[in-house]
Length: 294
Image 1 (tube, rainbow, N blue to C red):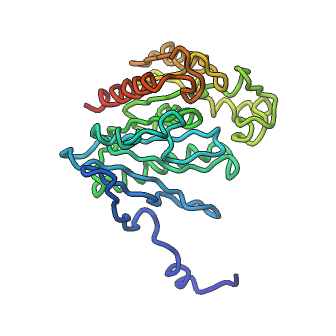
Image 2 (cartoon, rainbow, N blue to C red):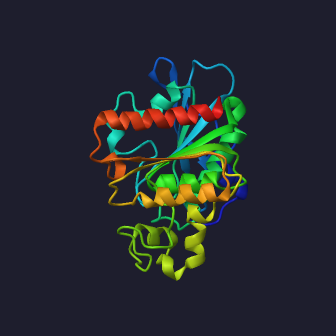
C-alpha cells in the first residue's frame, strides 16, 4: 500500500481503546450485563487485544474486580474458558463470580505463536491499565483486584500478582506452573519443543535468565498479596510440586497469607474429579476472593 496523507490515515484508523466507545451490553441474566470483545490494547503489526467484562447490576458503589486469565499452554485457549470441568455449567463460572458481586474481566493475551515472553504478561498489565483508566465509567474499583488463573493462565496470574507495580488484592491460582528452570514431571528444560520453550523462544536451559524471570518461584517477596494455590494431587501435566514450591517460597519470604490446597484424585484441569468436588473447589476459591475485597 502506498503512502498516504497522515490525516487520512488517522481518520481511517479505529478509535484508540483508551477512548473508544464501549459496545452495547448483552443481558445473559436479568441482573447481569456483558460487554463482549472490548478492545483494551493495540500491538503494532498484531491483532487488537480484547476483553469481555461481566458487570452485575445489584451492587452499589464501585465493584471489586476479578481479572481471569485463561489456560492453554500459552499457545491456545479462549479468554472466557475456565477449563473443561466448568464448560457445562449453567450459569457459567464467570457469571457466578459476577453474581457474587464482582466485575469480571477475561482478557486476551498474545500466545506463544505470536510473541515470546514477556509479551503475554505485558498484555495483562495493559488490560489492568485500561481497566483503571476506564474505571469511572465501568464502575469498578481497580484497587480491589483479584487475579484468577488456571494452568498457563495461573502462571501468568502469579507473575502479575507478584509484580510490585501491580496493586493486586490477591491471587487465586489453579494447577499452574511456577518454575521453568528445573525438570518436574514431563517438563525437560533442555527441550526446545515444550510449551515452556515455545513461550520463551528457546529451551529454558539455554536462556536461564529469561527462564528465571518467567518463574514465579523466583519472584516471591515479603509484600506479596494473599495467594490461594489449588492443585490436583494426581496432576500428570503440571505436578502439584509446582504449587507446593511456590507456597513454600512465599512463606519463606514472609508473605502474609498463603493457602495451599491439594485435591486428592484430581488430574490436570480437575480431570477425574466428581462434579460436586469441582463445585467445592470453585466455591472455596470464590470465598477466598470475596474475603480479600470485603
